[in-house]
Length: 556
Image 1 (cartoon, one colour):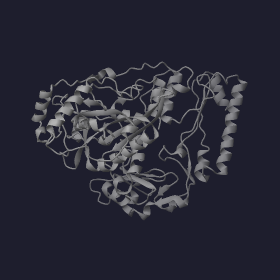
Image 2 (cartoon, rainbow, N blue to C red; image 1 turned 180 degrees about the vertical axis):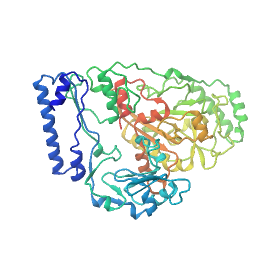
Image 3 (cartoon, rainbow, N blue to C red; image 1 turned 60 degrees about the horizontal axis):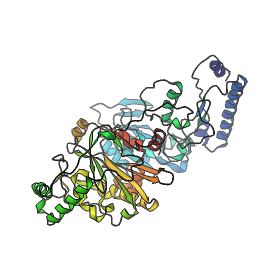
Image 4 (cartoon, rainbow, N blue to C red; image 1 turned 90 degrees about the vertical axis):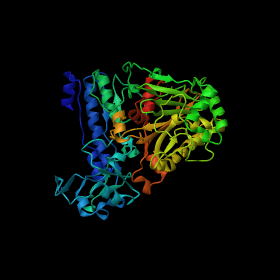
């Protein structure tokens, strides 16, 4: 402590102190043990010595002091251990690179007698990813097995050659080991950081920080930008979100907030009834037995949409902004933002009330899809009116605005292709139906909610939006890897965001579809709104103040 205070007196701008306790005691004896209590008392005394010396030098109000832990700790026991030796053969066990709270199994290396060897093309004695996943799936309700490309996006743990091919994430308080000879500790960490036991400590005191303030949990990745702001230096690219901790600073940097809404080009409907009828005839729509009625209903609704200039419900937060030019297609029921490059919707936005409450769940939005007449040939791969919704093997066209929540007088709008994306049948019947249940739950709780949904393309699984070249390389049919769903509610009395939730749902369910209920899968793929932004190049809440918006987008 004397050395640290001497450095500060001599003008050193940054001093870092590290204590290995109470981590060591937490591992050996468990987080609730007497050893941890004693270790905490010791650390508290050491920090007390530091503060006493700072007071003696009259430096206590001249410097910023931050006390932070890098992780939490949970208790583990022999009663909550899964032994891989009971599941995998000896060859596969050699491919296990790590155990405990995060298990990584390689298909490129093996480890024997603490020595790692790389497999060659001639190596025959190895177990493939497919075989590993098959052997491990559904073996225990307390461990979740993934090919790394299927890991929940909120974890940001996939796109690196140092991450093995098969990942096992045990539930909180559970451990996965090769056999009991590897089990020694009574406490562990490294679990999914959404578990409460993984939360850690953050305390800050000094002239740059507000005092007597308690804030909601945030991720440690935000600390880097906090320190660059305090030191007024330009930081390197990082995973934090600029401005996330402005709310705890007395004088945060001035942020220039720019809205990208002017890049949305409103695309009006400008056909006469005769022109619309001819357009539909050119797309084989006369084969529909209700052709005449459909034309008139569609004509009226599209004309009404020209006068629909404000999206009620999202006006307090703004439509998500995009960094690319997109077409704005308004309807009386919702708004579609359309990507003319991919020829698919970027997202739809709608306001739902209790009148929209789910009445009868239906996985199919309809069998007749009409190219949107406002797009003049933009629609790609979409069926004409005489075709069923499925145009590719095992795929169906899904409207991002679920028909279950739209009023009867607007249902014809759901036949427009501009709000549809191609997805596997199983995604619609299993996971999207469960998402509709979640929307219904929200409508039971709140009188009015905003819903945003759209496709995500992350074929290189780096947690960032793919460019068009990458998308077309992996999927010429532009099938999304995920579909996002964002729900928000508005507190009218306080003119503020009341609640929000984001889900990044994989269209390919991988091993999950065998042994997990859709409700569990939905919850497991809950994410930050910021994660949706990274995967779509959108920015939510552009009309909020910067400080409120960044907190809302990064909360989990």
